[in-house]
Image (cartoon, rainbow, N blue to C red; front, side, top):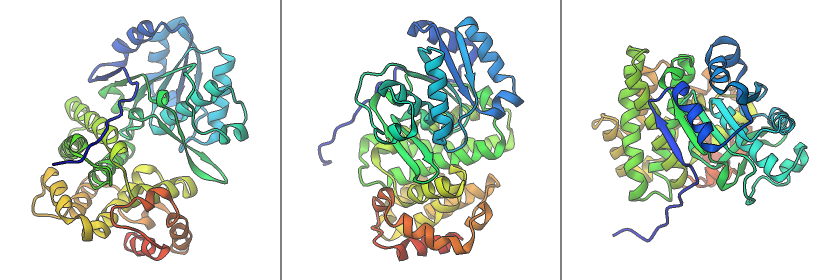
Length: 377
């Protein structure tokens, strides 16, 4: 018998899997009645691929601006510049094409436009909106971060580090998962962001708020990741493997955000916000060691995770480590540029981070964090 629970449905209307952005985006813009569309993307996608030109052609005269100034980790200066550019363009719809930094950045743009703020100081003073939205987002993800599933946006301040922004209508109104766009993403980024999704699955399944409603999606997601990612590694042009990975990313983050996370995510926020480590790589180097730390209190549930990954005779930590190795991703903190003399500062900050403090095996001191970091370094 499980305890009573409430599932909060966010105002996301449609999620398209396996459809091309060419055939889907124009119809969605028309359905939403938008006339002035503001497109945000990365410099790399805009410069090195034809994807953004295709999207601009699809939108035609409705595309009023293309912005490529939101940097990795959604640096607030670029986010605010995007908000001001969207305001100047009189945009009535945002389209985010890219990874989590772009999609999260546009969530903060939505908050800024809804609240009518135009400085970083005023943005930092709010960070949560309950007002009716003045603008929404269509997300076109090119990675597997899962940012498109949540009403929470992360953005980075150079002094304060990674910060959270929230509001129910910040969740993208529509999501379009196009496997062909996934092929444009560098292999290291596709696979790295996928391990972030595996992190959502593992920490979500072990999370303090996990329940049967969420667990089914998390176990199915980690199973899909374990098979589809290896298939993409073997045959990068297999669209069906990429669609399965995109489905896994959706299930992982949509359920994981509700069940909670722990030290891997919390330390990862610090590694990204303070030390410019890619979120996916932060999960690569932290998740196996956090799983081993947590095994003392979550051994039975970790065995279920390992079985879902097709490795019933391994621990969850070893199953994740094997997947990371098969994808040829970094596995140590030293591999992603963290120096040994930085570990104590990371531990001190992490020991106070609310996400770290929600870890299923309680972390009560910087010494606990240092034990994990030493294993990972």
